[in-house]
Image (cartoon, rainbow, N blue to C red; front, top):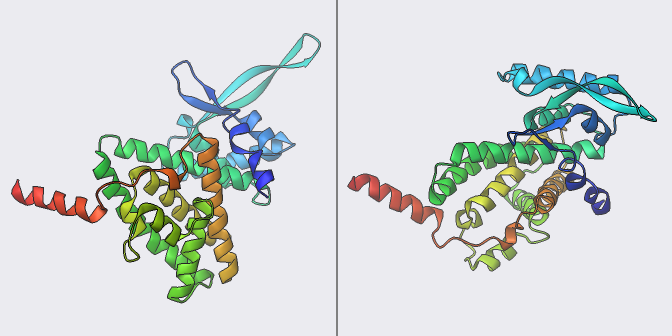
Length: 278
């Protein structure tokens, strides 16, 4: 399984990315079709049309994400012909893989890849003016909300008792942290057993865990996963795919990111004090 995953991501989705003269990234639909293993353009067009509908439904301007173009392609010795193609934004690619054939392994990898890239950009756009401490507070609050939703999804899948949920959570950490569970992560951070590891993460590490939680939540619900073992396996696999994507993008593995000097509680207390004094 690991070998199969290693041939995706960097050598596919990043490898076919293009940049406009202004430095804006985009993908060609015809190239994405090949990567996603669709042999017939007409079948892939059906997926694209579903993605366009989803784009409209979400309130986005479709023309900002799907741009029809014509380009010349070689068909023989010194011979070319014109074909229709579509320039796709990252968000358009995300919608396409969300509507693709879930039986394809590359579709599952693409869903993780474009979800992470899209979410990364959302966080950058939303938090770019915030300080590191403000980013930590904001993402930690999002993490609390999404963990509630994840717990609900896990319960629907059959994770019922607190002990079972602790095992379920640990599987997600093991996938994302290369086999390290909550206790091992606590030890690396020099934390006590009663200290929450999420409260001692920087914004980058928190963001990686937020991706893990949101994607697991969506996958459990979308695929109607049932059974504790299946839920645990799903959480582990999502964490592992997030880790693989971070690696392929040249990022730092979460267990190697520095632990901040201040906890989330210390930052919140300091901000509250400043507000009271102002």
